[in-house]
Image (cartoon, rainbow, N blue to C red):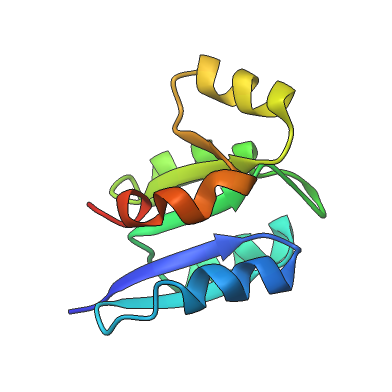
Length: 113
């Protein structure tokens, strides 16, 4: 059974690179380019993992955290940021956050259960 991953990022080439670097038969990927699109997709589909840029069109992806805990508590969420200040703020809340420029060094760890 394949694991479903939602990538929330408005940088389509970045999302494609993440997908291409992890093209295995055990994962299926979807991409949302805005907060509203991610919300619509989450209503229609369950995901095992959401990999979310902290700043996307429509607001902060952190707002999805509360929504997940109420309707899809098993979904893991990992935040990404290119900005040190955002990285530190999300990390200080106890959430998993990675720097976008380091994602290719950590991908194998990101998609593990």
